Length: 127
Length: 127
DNA sequence: TCAGATCTTCTACAGGATGTAGAAGATCCC
DNA sequence: GGGATCTTCTACATCCTGTAGAAGATCTGA
Image 1 (cartoon, rainbow over the protein chains, first blue to last red):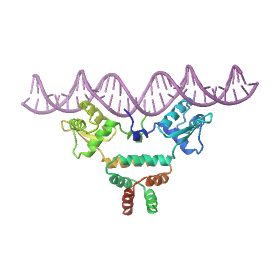
Image 2: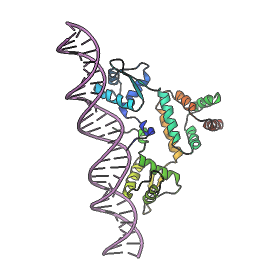
Image 3: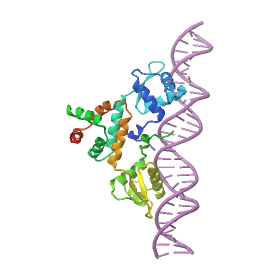
Image 4: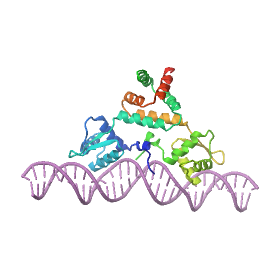
């Protein structure tokens, strides 16, 4: 069963952890960097083989979420887009799956906090 | 690997097709109804065994997306929530995965059509 | 330059999710 | 009661993800 574009966006747990690390650090990281940081992640600390991290990075690369610099010797990896862009795109993809987008937006607005609503008003005002 | 709540929301192709049928018809449907409708779906017409449809329905039930009326003899199935509610919830879940929700909303607004932006303004105005 | 260290790629396997459906058990109607 | 209809159980294939060893590639100090 082929995964369509949108379902591809759903990441596994480890894939997600790696993306979180790449997203929260500004610098491109090596597989070893990531391995070490994963080993020190408070609650869900994972002591993984570097090859495991490399495999995950390759898969993320194939999914288009990560890019690697092949020039440097320990390859360096970085997220292709910011977490915010990625998340916004996911939201947009979800929105796109429904025929009546306005109705979806109506429900969505209803489920948003007042603070978020205020943010939205502000963003939509100067637009 | 346990699926978290949000990843559970990502459906397979057939599961998605069945949900689409349940969402677009007002009446609760039997497995046979659905089987027949799947067999007449223009492009991606699928000629499936009824048991296949039943299996999928059971799985959707387990995921909380579908409810079945056990009273009637051919059980009747219907979606638990509307497509719009479901989609809005997905969007909200996506939003929840990012620490900086406001930044996500900003990107999201940027990717929305003018018509949708207008809808949002209207919805947010009377709030 | 060469050998040990470091790094990457290949290959592999396990477990869960999904598509698919037959066999067998349950229920209904004539 | 018995054939027809319906549901549940069981099963298998494939894909995705987690996980990592083996083997190949590359680098670096002596």
